[in-house]
Image (cartoon, rainbow, N blue to C red):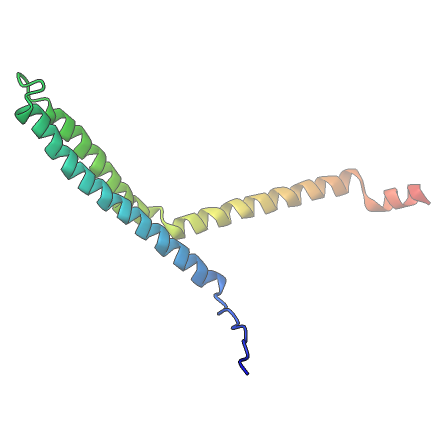
Length: 129
């Protein structure tokens, strides 16, 4: 007889899970950047063809401005993917999250202290009796 056993899923700890998610996020960013590059190159060729071959606005080389602006946007995209992520990547996000959590815990502690001084538990318990 065949017996079907359920395989236990491999336990992936939280740190490994975060590393995998970060890697997938980076892969997606780089894939979008390279797609942007391909679209930019094809689009640039089409702009030149429209202006020079189809003679749309042939009196002025407007494709140069279109390609220049598009190239600037591509450079911004590449800067965001390769440079900004170095400084504001996963470690930066983790530190910011820890700072915000610490601030929230401090504020909660302050509020609890205010409540305890304004409404001490011993006086509330005495009133109920």
